[in-house]
Length: 109
Length: 114
Image (cartoon, rainbow over all chains, first blue to last red):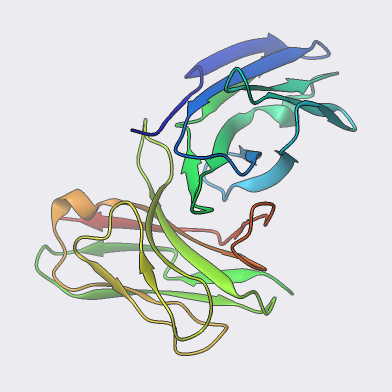
């Protein structure tokens, strides 16, 4: 079967750095997405990785290792507005997105 | 304002009733999707459409039907609602169905079936 694993919840301090991990087992791989979802709102796109390595976009970076079936999202200089759920999704062989359950990130002052 | 709209925002429905959730996008995207989101579970694909006139089944299609008469609209119908269909429903769209096609999401419809 297809499976995406992420931690259920993480807590971090404002101004700090946090890494959210995602491991996957899917039938085929056509890229990995990270989305942010604030409570009661729609998911919004953060990043897309299809090749191994680190993609940096401002305070957010995303890393991919296809051989390990592993990705992480790195958030730097955390702000209170970063409190949200972070969703990992893999595009499988049919270009269907398989979604993890999401990691709820709590930022404390 | 470009984007995706969904209606209604929320709905309480008696079991056995028929319900259509509406979704409209103005980005001229070819592909559209319906997901449900339940606590503790990832988004699950109900149905999708690669282009106007075509539809396909996702991971959890039973009890739901869709149509795609034109590019902009992608309604989701529950023929006879059951309590297990209580969920938050998100409509999404993307330019195509290729690997790097970012999906854009509507604001969601919160549906409660009693």
